[in-house]
Amino acid sequence: MKRKGFTLIELLVVIAVIAILAAMLLPVLSQAREKARQTVCMNNLKQLGLATHMYAQDFDGYLPPGNGIVNNGDGSGGSTDIWEWRVSSNPTFVLSNGGYRGPGYFLKGYRATGRGLYLPSIEVFICPSCKRCGNAVVGTKQYLVGRYENTSSDISCPTVYAWNHSTDIYTHSWNPVSKAYGKLDKAIKLGAIWMADAYQPYSWPPTPGQTPWYGNHLDKTGLPTGFNVLFFDGSVKWIPGWRIFNILLGYGTGGNYNHGCDFWTKLNWNNLSY
Image (cartoon, rainbow, N blue to C red):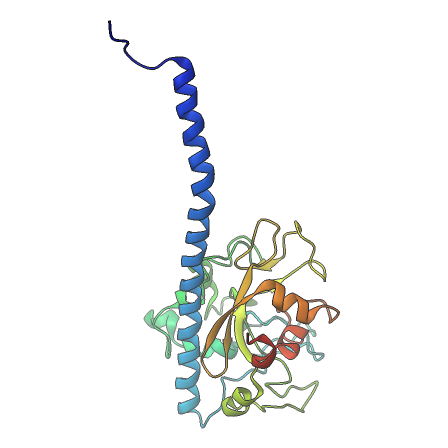
């Protein structure tokens, strides 16, 4: 007489085998998804690099203006803001009608037409690996569309990519000396970083398990596995996080959220090439 079905032991063995296979495959699938997100992120930065060169061709080799609407006079200020509108009388800020900052010029006119002057979509500023940047919603299209070119109140539009607003690249009211003076060709010769995945840890050196305020491509410890980095020549490289952390160890507070921080002045093509 033939037996029908499985015994309890056989069923448990099958379940155990499936569980083992799932445990083996899930990390691989997760890594594959992250690799895909890194590729999308890299393509975003390539488009931003192309827009930079298009802008420079139209403006005698100059980069989009970097002297921000928000200016605390000492080099402090966010390097993720691409739009600022200030109508308050807060003496901390330079009073202004507000406007574009750095790569925000590439999207000029987006609110009215749905297409930027040098970029086809605002989604180029969105990294698919952003976990939490500034607050829970910064990395979404809805957030950017709601804030970019919005003049309803004191408002800024930060993105999940930070940009080099340092005195190496621009002159500022607190430091009129610059290595590049806002010129693309000089910035290229410096080998400087133009844009990168935004990252701001709570402490420096960053502590594993301590979620940063800002961060793309994070691992389980809350630290970036690496950074997609756009250089001024338009090239984009994936740089492992350990390499950047080793170079910056002992300097400043880490991260790249503040445009006066060491991320922009200590890192360049020469020490990031490998």
